[in-house]
Image (tube, rainbow, N blue to C red; front, side, top):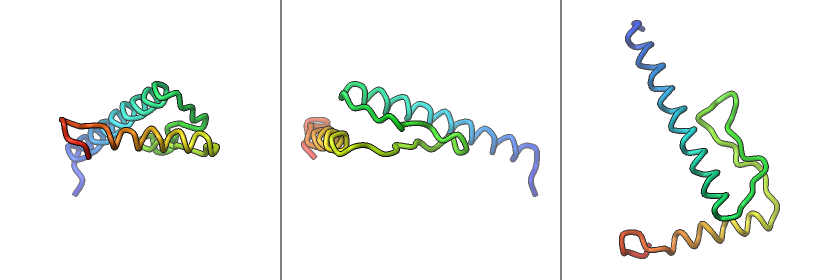
Length: 82
């Protein structure tokens, strides 16, 4: 049985996911900007706003992105190298 309350909770949960997705997207875009990486097709999905499309990139961008990710994996976190 679906009640008004359960509908309201469902809507609130979706808003929370969308807000979280918007913050994650902004964080990703900011990190890419700081790293000097441009992904022209980076965008949020219009039909499913909780998804981010990374899209296609050229080999140079893929290599740069991989290098930045790997460098982050090797960086100490809390004094411990992963």
